[in-house]
Image (cartoon, rainbow, N blue to C red; front, side):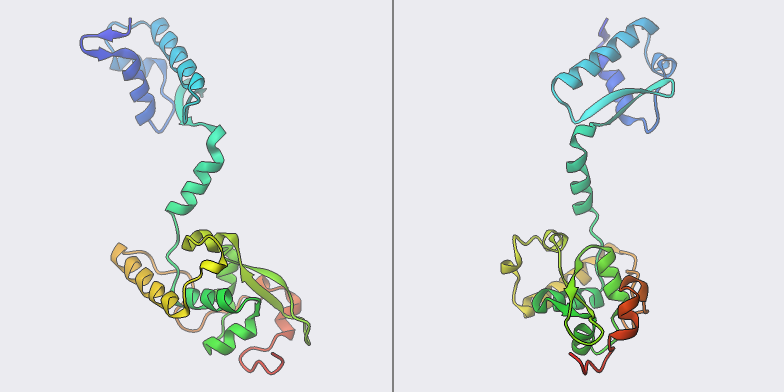
Length: 223
């Protein structure tokens, strides 16, 4: 039942399920095979399901919408999400990397601290890094207005392949990393990041209403 000429019928069925982006019906499988009954096809699919289950395969065969489809095993969903995250890293712009370096080396820092060093409004880039979970709010500074203070996250360590903050390179090496990432992004023809390379747009909602009216911008007199 499993062979037809030099072909393994079960292997053919598995291949059809693997290459199809949609559920494959019994009739569709039958068209691809010669002299194989519907009953035999169903039996072979059941065998494949059992084999995948017994060896805890990374793939499972499920019955969906009148057909069968091969899907990733939900048992390994966490690993898949982590892999997807590492394979799809966004190439950060120079303003984002510059701001990230300031937070990494000076943390905890306020937005005004960042702007004093950069010399430019950093609302947009700070909001972008918060959205990417590369930085986080770690508290409020005990001064007038109680502005938010920022620090790096576990995702920051993962992004740069660091075990801990103790593994941070020297500041000048971080600058070289910026150049390398920019060149890599240009060679890959990546789309430009959402924040601009000059004056970032203000995004007060990312900071919260209390900081919108109380935190100084470029002067930093209170900090």
